[in-house]
Length: 628
Ligand SMILES: C[S@@+](CC[C@H](N)C(=O)[O-])C[C@H]1O[C@@H](n2cnc3c(N)ncnc32)[C@H](O)[C@@H]1O
Image (tube, rainbow, N blue to C red):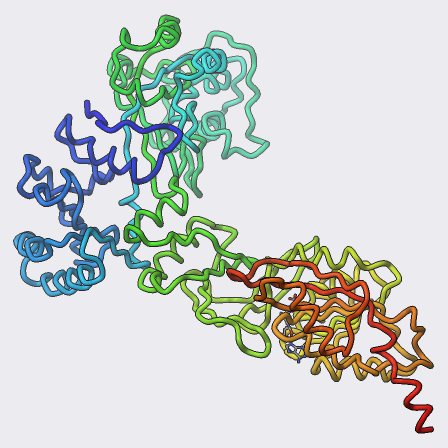
């Protein structure tokens, strides 16, 4: 049997380690398992390894002498010729090209050369290049030999506790996996138990047997009650006279996947050494069993080399040592492991992304540009079904509506999505409006300061993440945005959350919006003002200076203002409060400045909260009287 010559520490199972281990499989038994799929073949040049078999579909080429033994240089498909994913490159391009020419012929050479030159130019050492659309998921499959104990299902729980420290301990791999046939025929036994048979026709027999064998696919009407065990006839006896086509139909229906408990797209376990199988092909019913996967250190041990605790279990009737093949597929590996494998060595792995509804929004660096589609494809696949679209921010936000410049990289092209925040739903089109999920906590902090009697004036409200949530709590909200798309979504969101009766939406410049509110009759006595346009909201504070009428407003009830801004100063609070004081003409008393978050190294987003001073809000009385 093949041996994995490199051990895997259970705590650090990584694709890289697994790859090395998988590549080393061939050392003992002459089998190269760069890929687990049988259709894959390995061609090795200049090493002791021989060509195993060549299929017309795909090849893995190993350059023994120039690379670490067993390392894969090229993988190509006869259909797509070149640019297959998982491609690794070495400086010996010329030599590689010549050797490949022998295998693939002159026709493919041009592409190979182009690709080789491009890659070597980018990086003189080993290089991996993957085109998103061609991501070869199979190249991430790793196969391991593992020893396991097959034990009677009834005793499995007991043995698991007795074998602590001896069972396989790899992340996301169950050490008691369900494998095909491990239920034995016990369900069948009870069904076929003669007194219990309500089977009149061969068709109903098929249905009953199917539902007993594959309970996951049966509906409640088909459920079989397992009664106490009694002597039962063999399946062969029961099905005597039944048409063989009908017996075939007893196989499970395959409607979706995974269908059965032993079918896992990420981890597969197969028993490869089946002692009993050879002896007993008879259709006598088998007992239900379970596999207990043993720690990788025992994979090639014989019974008497195993620790005492394992040997004790093996001495029990019905227990046996079996050899298994554990396959970890592309679906198994976490996103960062796949990205590490695909991107060139030393490149930053873009593992974090923001999500807005079903959209993952990446902020890739320049170095990622050639790989952006691949990265996006992996992000999409590794975060499904939650993520259905992946976009990249291509430029800093600098337009007046604060919308992001986005490039669609993978998935469905619709950027209209629904976000749930603080229990409310927000519909928005990321292409035409501003949204930042990272500010959810800040929005909640702010809304928590509002009280039931408040009347809120939100000057830069976007699609309403503050205005709509506030509407649920306060007396009334006046919300405004310059972007017509944002205000139409805001209106929609108020309706969506049944809050339209508690808010009024305007679509105008923020200064004009405030002036209009102040000019209303009857007056609108708003008590909270939200100014969430961090780039230049402070500049808009001038709209409040000398703008309030003493006849309408009580000086003790002037609004509380919350104005957002950025500061790169060493003392951001001091710098920001000075800026506010400059615009208002004086420093408000008891101004509180909250650090919202660090948006870039040394740059803070801040929120200054203060009550508008009467000396700022009202026209100068004395001056007016002097002239009167
Ligand atoms: C940073 S976003 C904040 C939106 C919203 N408060 C949020 O948290 O999602 C700023 C908003 O101000 C709007 N805006 C920009 N200039 C404006 C102006 N002069 N008057 C009114 N709204 C403006 C933009 O359209 C954008 O929706």
